[in-house]
Image (cartoon, rainbow, N blue to C red; front, side, top):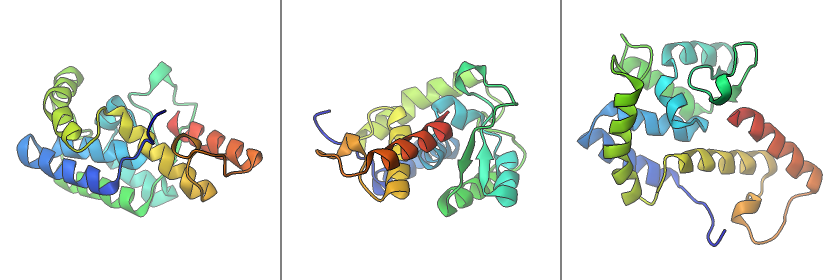
Length: 178
């Protein structure tokens, strides 16, 4: 990689504010959820936020079921730790849309996803976020720093973490990302 993959909280906040103002709050929430929990586009749109809110209050984690790649069954858990920011985000989504289960808000996934691509992605690009997937990468990088205390290998020129710690951090992050 020629330059480090760096998406900052400020970039995401500014992009989400503009997305909410111009195309709607649900698209802003989809971006914020993807960034806070490292979810794919489909997973963030299909996340049942009331269920996630209950899971966070009980265990401090969410279990992603809907929209996962490979048709993950309910028997395989994919738990993602909820930070304080993630917890407040899910609570605000529940408050904003009390009558809905997920961010589709009665539309089909195809319609909502295409609107996200057509209208929100250009606004994300304006703030240096070229693809929705970069929000997932940013989550992985943040988690690597939280676990090891060092920059991830993709963002640093030299290896700074012991091999065993690096391997353990990668394994933990891989489980969270599914």
